[in-house]
Image (cartoon, rainbow, N blue to C red; front, side, top):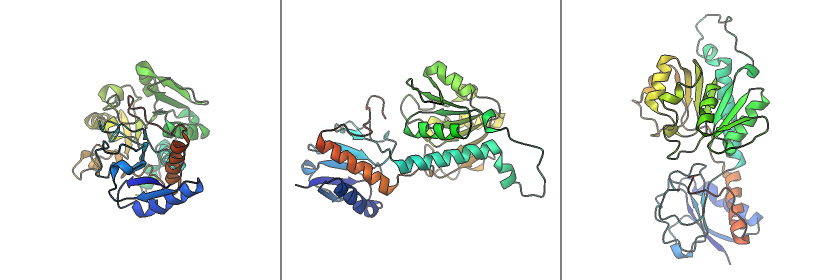
Length: 312
């Protein structure tokens, strides 16, 4: 008997995911009845979900064994009081590789001072300023989940001394791992370049405020591909104007698209990128969805199950 899978992740991406999920399911020996139209909630076995969809009441889906998010971030669904089913976030190789490439590119951009040459095509021979070697430029990554850990390892391979910070204690070979409030202050003090890859929770809202920016070395760099709410915008602007932060590259914002009148657009020390650091890739994401359906049917633990107390 075919499993009923409701694709509640948006009409715009339905055509590309339809065949991919069906193919990934068939590869695992699963017969699925996949639909993006409003079904009988009591007949749905699994929901493939993204917050762009209007679905907000999960109560009627009494047979549903799991909600499988296509997004890595789940802050817009995890607090939903009607969601009593297991919730799985998206972790897939394509998304992780994309984030590693974006973060590594912008770390190297700031480390090497590329903007001075790319933007300064004005006939001035700027030979006097040389960057240090990577081994002399310290990088701190806030957040040591799948994305943060992968970025930390990639940067360590390039010889950057990498410090990672997480709320709970972790150990990663080649990475100096810190945790807790005291560990955060130390991690920031080591951050010649800071990369923020934490999820948005009550504990991380405005984590980077004036007090935390003051812990960082003078003239350091900030790269945020995590969540816009991690940053106190006014505190960042003040830190930029004071020279505490030399440059900031921001990919995520509290309101997206970033409003045209926002100060970040016009600030000479801010680079705005339009939430492109990492996207879910259809082929690999479909495999994760199908694998979790297989696990659910086999009675095996789900991959990337969200801890509702922590919010990720």
